[in-house]
Amino acid sequence: MESQTVENKKSFGKEVIISLVAFANTDGGKVVVGVNDNGEPCGLKIGLETLQRYLNEIKVATYPQLIPKALIETRDNKKVIIFEINEFPIKPVAFKNRYYKRVHNSNHLLTLDEIVDLQQQSLSLSFDAYPSRAKGSVKK
Image 1: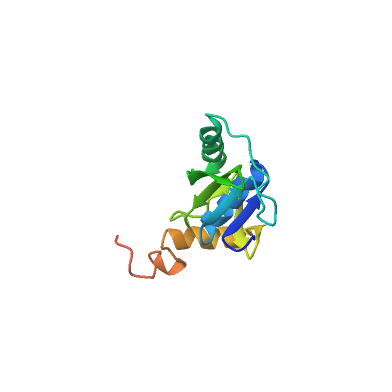
Image 2 (image 1 turned 120 degrees about the horizontal axis):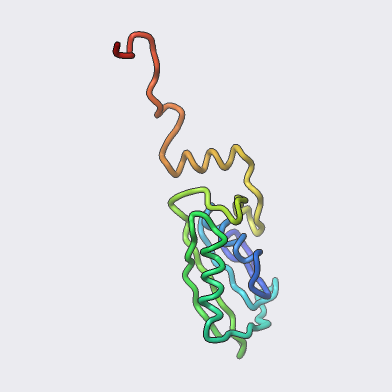
């Protein structure tokens, strides 16, 4: 079942990467590839290089680059891949210059204000942290 921290996908594609980005910008989570929306396995064809190719696609399409944990599992005699990502310390993370967050069981584009807020939070900055230019404080 899909939730705030779990997403199911029938196959690997950009939606998998968007979900990983949304999880990285929120509380972390797992994307299970090779299952339908109800979590029932439909299976994947997994070759020798499949997992490495998927991980490389994720890495190349994200900034900062995400490298999730990846695990191949057999469910009902069908192969599935589980990608797991923790909340990322440096935010926001982008997929092809677009930023997403996880809300309940779906991904949402971040607004410009949300992007700025995440960036400031991850850098532990606020507008109060900038030096003031009060009269008399500038050396001559």
